[in-house]
Length: 397
Image (cartoon, rainbow, N blue to C red; front, side):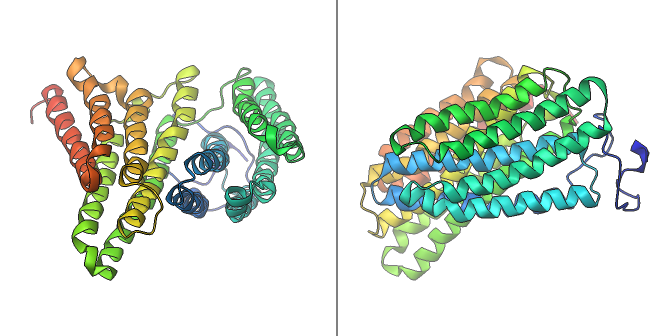
């Protein structure tokens, strides 16, 4: 079959398609239903990581909670990244492709099941098992691609496959090291995992679709922000159930929603696919989203921590609880500005909006019970300032 036999809008489904590179200039390239199902299943893992982070921080175990969250979220994020970029270049949506994707989904569900044990007992066995399942399926996909391409494209696909197998063996071996060196071993393996695409793409850049990649990252941003919306919902529910502290919880819910809505507005203010180019910029943008996704999901966990502290179920101070919201919010702002929206800014004033807002959000940490509402107002003000400044460069209608 030729490239024109692929499944696309308006064409009939075919059970077996030759896996060749997709056209990076393909028109009307959008996320497929299978990709959306894949993302939906990742919500389970993200939610598990957020729940364990809430419990750890609420109990005053900040270092343990943050470290565990960073480790687990890295595995979730990188598995999603690898699938997303491969799909953008080689998605055939035929029977073998769907089965391999379903196996990856099983892997992320196993990973999600291992999150509590990883947090509570520092036992990453189940989590690593789920991660390896996902990578085995992805290795099969790269080997299938290598079989159907030639020259530099085949070299790149084989490098991906070999690199994934080597790194998978490393992750399994890491389970055998003493607990005292696990952290350093994790960092080393994370660097090795991140290096696989860099080495593989040295032969030839895979034919990912800039608009499709931007859409995929945008959809996952919505998913992790959705976790924060759920947290604000919990705050509202708690306000209804705990009528004695209704006046304290409603401002938290409103402030949390302001933060989430503003984060959405800020992220999607720039059509980033126009600036998404190959090489180092693409890697920095793609890898930098670890902090965007991680901080966005952590905002929701932080809102739940503030609620727990307000109803006297958390063993931490009011300031510490507020920091659980303001610190990830500030990190989100700085990271989005640095890797995502900076290229579209003009002049010092526009560039200063997001970093300046990050400073104000951090300062809100010390506003006591009003920390979350104040941070939300600061975020909304940043959105308004950005719109006013950017409107100066828009053509009149």
